[in-house]
Amino acid sequence: MRYLRAICVVLMGMFFVGYTQAATDAREQIDRLSDEAALLAQRQQSTGIALADEIWNLAELGYLEFQSSAALQNYLRDNDFKVDSDVGGIPTAFVASYRSNGANAADPVIAILAEFDALPGLNQAATPFRSVSQEGGSGHACGHHLFGAASSTAAVAVSQWLLANNVQATIKLVGTPAEEGGSGKVYLARAGVFDGVDVVLHWHPGDGNSASPSSTTSNKSGRFTFTGRAAHAASAPDRGRSALDGVEAMNYMVNLMREHVPQTARMHYVITDGGDAPNIVPETAQVYYYVRHPERDQVVELFDRVVRAAEAAAMGTDTQVDVEVMHGNYPVLPNHTLARLVNDNLVAMGGISYTPEEQAFAETIRSTLISPRRELGSEQHVAPYQPRQSMGSTDVGDVSWLVPTVGFSTATWVPGTPAHSWQAVAAGGMSIGHKGMGLASRLLAKSAAQLILQPEVMAEAKAELRRAQGPDFVYAALLGDREPPLNYRK
Image (cartoon, rainbow, N blue to C red):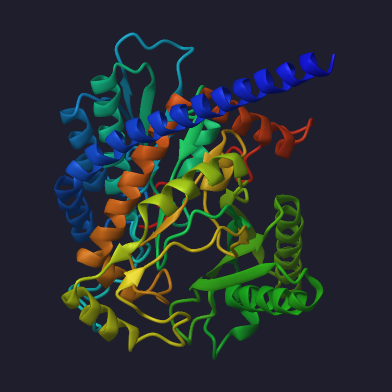
């Protein structure tokens, strides 16, 4: 009996060693194959730079990105993608698909998101000092020109990889307009654009390299338009009712609310119309509000309180108020299964090195920043894996509640550079931005290839999403059934 037991132990050990070796060999094979996708993305780098620079120069605002969208669509068509334009009722939105020969509905479908809208009033030349090329013009202060170009070159690289290796799958590049306050992806999600997709990949420019899972705040915004009665402000003020009084009363009450909201809530506003002249009692006035919180139910509750403040302000000033919900985003739902895979790939690829010229550019930019958070070296390393909570918002959130979604950031800006700044525009228009974009493209391509080769990872990511959603989850867009606000930037 003792002899038989010893034999069993030896056989089990041999089986375990053989199984472990086979698993190691399989992982190495997957790594080698996915490296080919990254190499194909690297070969698209010069094309990606040209695309990014074209979109950087165009700097088109949300839902008005006609030339930027067309540039990406033309590139994808030229690389054998089937392009569907004007999706979800948005003229600048599109879905470009490549299905490998023999692929069917049972084969993997990977989607990569691509943004391309700019921000108003942040025009800047690619110089390390404040230099406006077009007074009052827009600029890519959030790096969406790099986002769109890197995602598109990664999608083309994956399509080439599928063909070269005879792998059956579908790769989709989803062109998503108006992330900056327009909630473009929410309308696409509501229209079913992501139905049938197994995994969604995205990335974002930043001041460092990180693939740690992170969430964002949920966000709901609205325009509050007050209407009163015009009159001469000096000779007949009693006959007027000031719409601006309504706006100011509302703002006062909302500012009192700040003492009585959760610590993680954010409320901010701008007065978009305050009247025409001091000697005219304003007949119309408008204020534009954003309300944020990490939990979507809290955002709904807080926004309703803001609405009640507006209604009270109208009552107290004898005016009327109209509320137009402009956009609403869910918080991003992290997927740790996918985040670990992408993080491992990013660590293996490493960070970014600067040339002496780029270092000098960065040093000059750094001198213009207020309290830069990190030391500036000649390399941008990969940040440690650590779940995070961002106070910003993105319409990627809605997508992440419908499909397993993973994102990351790469260093396209100088360390310490805030998004929505002229310093971000400057770095994004030169080689510092291009290097971060190249890393993003390679990482997207490699990660997509690995997921296609590992259906069991996608299955676990889907199971994780179902657990996070909960058994009673039903998707309902926070912006309701309104149509896309295509003129919100005009």
